[in-house]
Amino acid sequence: MLMNNIYTSEFLNRNYTSFLRGLCMIAIVFAHTANEFPALLTEYHISGLLIGGRLATGVFFFLSGYGLTLSMKRNNVDRSYIVRHLRHLLLPYLVFWTFYIVVGLLTRSLPTDISFFMQFFLLKMPYTDAWFFRTILGIYVVYFSLARVMKARAGIGLTSFIIVYAIVLAAVGAPSYCWNTIMSFPLGILCATHVVSFKRVASWKGAFFFLCLAVAFYKLPIPVFLREVCPPMACCMFLTSLSAKMRLFPGKTVMAFIGQNSLYMYLMEEIPIDYISSAQTGFLVFVGGGIAITILLTYAGKKMETLIFRGASTT
Image (cartoon, rainbow, N blue to C red; front, top):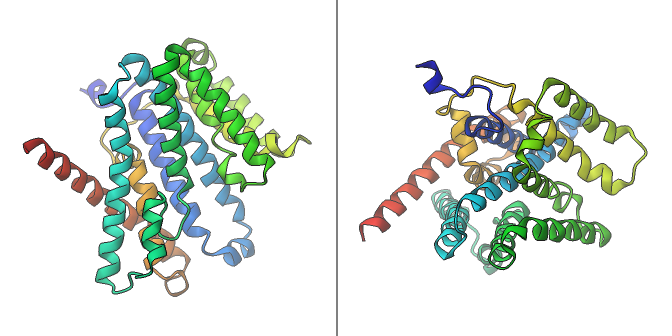
């Protein structure tokens, strides 16, 4: 019975990656909510905790590259496949905006200017850039297009595209968060393409090596571009090395649910951040409450998505 409920040591198994996604999503929501208190973070010398959000984003890109590449190897990338995957990205976005507007109407604080609603058509959140959502959507579109043209070499094509994309953004002075974690996606492609080779580093020694490497990148006198992109990639390899050694990750937990619905978490966090005053609630309530409310909204959003699909299937 125990073996049916948990995965034993298996390289990047679904339970482990769901747990990682959940843990990383909590780190991202924490970073975004805690960022509302810069003076307090500076006073207590804990501003460094915010870097967890950056590393977590890199892990998301890595797992997305890994999972999508394996999926494309096992399935025919036809029209129905593409529509299904894009729908799983766009529907949470629609549900989020619906929730945001409903909360705004209930609290009588919904903006009426046209620029607010234009954000929807620009694939943004009301008051946040939502760069991650647009980036992952763009990557999926490019990857699917390359798969139809280049077939098995689509991963090489996308990797080249992402490398050039990151270098160009860095060169033109774009904010570092727009490009410093995206390089982890090609690393995920590489891992999915050469699983056997990556399994060889899945050990305690490998994990220790990549952990030291991640720290060293912040200390070594290397170019700024490498200092930005290398730590998230080293963090991904650290967690990958642990995957075959870690156990006891049940498939049905709150953390697994968060991981399996991480896009909802990423989007829904904007609602408590925008509608709750950080100045009035304080650090603990705003951060803790923001995480809790985001989880509840994610659950409600997923339920709404299920109802939409159920309704569509009956028509």
